[in-house]
Image 1 (spheres, helix red, strand yellow):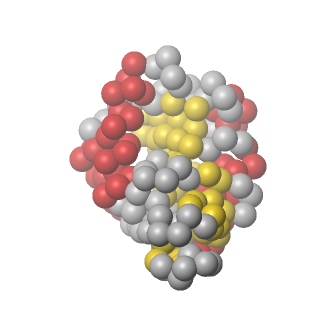
Image 2 (cartoon, one colour):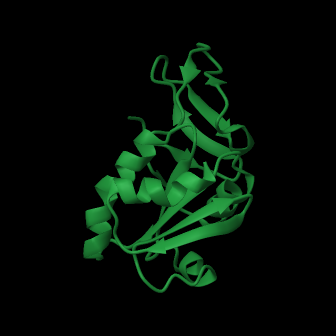
Length: 152
């Protein structure tokens, strides 16, 4: 899978057919996107998106047309390492219905403070820039799906 990057306007990904870099605007997530060069359909993200800035976090969670599941984690956290493959499963299974993102609280401590994340892993579900649900602790993919299903 291609590495997905973010900026304040959307998700940046490379077309698997022609190699052209494309931007999927947050407001259009859940709709069909086509490559600007070869016109092939671009798939919804099927993997967690690593958010690298407060600006990208705010833009994604406030402007995404889809609910955004955010995994707040840290690299030294054992339970975070255990839940990481489960988050990947959920991202793959819910593509087109949810966006799954990850926030490393060591790299972006301001987001951990802003959302009062006191235990990791913590999963927050955002719609329209508002946190609508939260769950702390490591969970298997089935429990994560059950947690987010009411917001589909």
